Length: 143
Image (cartoon, rainbow, N blue to C red; front, top):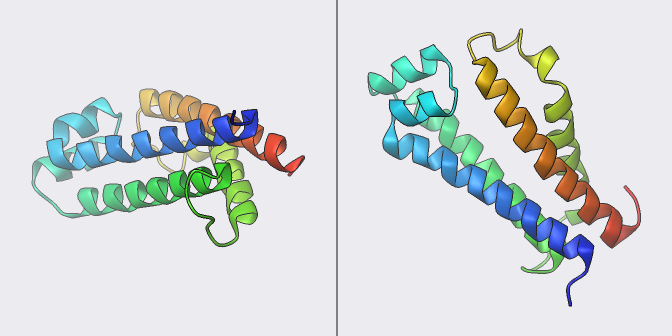
């Protein structure tokens, strides 16, 4: 039976992968999906005009999220070990948690993003970060 830590990392990895797929869906669907996800008006208008940069930014984010999913699954022992797994998972966990709580400080830097975007994405980051934190603590004893 898998440990709580392994289950938490598998779930955290699945959430990262789901977030990556959601980003890819924005690229495939276009402006309506960007709108639902709370993207800025500038991003939505650029997607409507067929500009490449919204898709490139979104693809980059999706790639990072897939990589993070892989690290979570490697940490859980589901896939082969990846280089610097403990360091990477600790950093990934920190990024998720800091992103979740730092959104009031990030909002002025990205003023075009909607309030819905900030609240939903921060909540999602908090949940994913906590799953990673539980996995790390349960599997390795501490950060």
